[in-house]
Length: 84
Image (cartoon, rainbow, N blue to C red):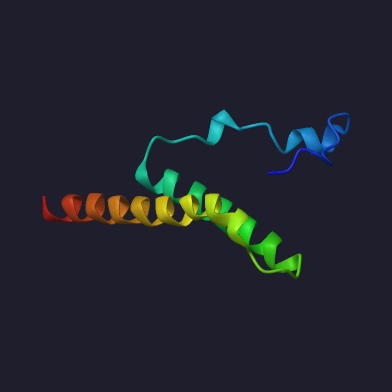
């Protein structure tokens, strides 16, 4: 994220950084949905910018990898519950 153009005086922009603790749930599904949401927003923003992701976007590859890992854990957890 670039903070270069971020206006720390703007209350609406600062609200985007506030985490809602009331909705938190320590489950694989919650973690997976959180990463999927972040991935969707980043890709959507990149496509709206009308430019290709370049080598500086490599750090973003962590999010799809982690999202896939969480998806596997969620499915394994679901399989274990079904087999009981």
